[in-house]
Length: 359
Image: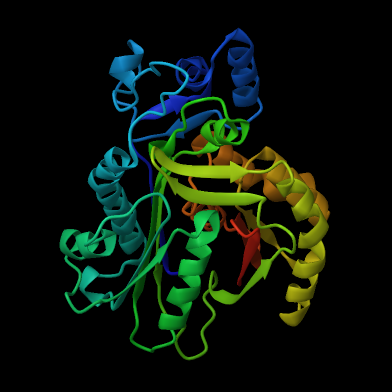
């Protein structure tokens, strides 16, 4: 990973403000409004960036014009088509900004890119973000394109698996870009799982420039291995489906327990295959699905408190941006000169854990 870049929309939503705004969309009575404020307060999020926020202050209609106040208990907000129109307008420039920052960080000229991998699970249109980036960045029109879609929060690690395979060619220069606009799927009404998702998710993009190590060089922050594990009896624990009024997420309270039960044994075995023990890992880039998920990972792996500080910092300052989030964490660790090897972990529908070893 010779270059990393990240980007967020300019609109910053304080979590305290989000807690005050949300009853207009989700609460049918004062009891639900109080419950909402408690959920927002326990989310581990302080600020989030979102494309739907148009003003920091003022009446609700001026601040988030995309989401009108619920007209009644059956109002579910904008249609999926309306949400996708915003995605098509807002996702490409955010992806472009992250990509330009990664290219600059790698000191790689845009014309050198031979492969392009895009990742997203929060929107669709075609010609897609890959085609838009070719024009916007000035990539070669013969660049090899791959899109990794609808895989959820671990999608960037799936994309990096594709990129690492492509980077085996000596002259390859791979640009990966993950972009998500989770705020376009804000759910109206009182459904506890979707309300919890409302408290956590945000918008962001991250990009990686990947190059092959030349002549056996190991310059650091190289993808060494990747692994995946589909947890048994977990199909109903997390899902992401297309509805009439946005994409609908289910996030069962069983997820932390499944992680505690399954993660430690599988990861220890996978690390052993790489010639490592858990205590050999120098740093951890764990996707912050939420504070309970981070707590479950810490318990399952018997990690010390400081090992997940960067994951918690990203959750606190940016929320859960789905697939780009783990790249935000890797960027911070890399800039800080964190100890290697580093293990990146992310979770998504399945319930699946994706792992990546960086050394």
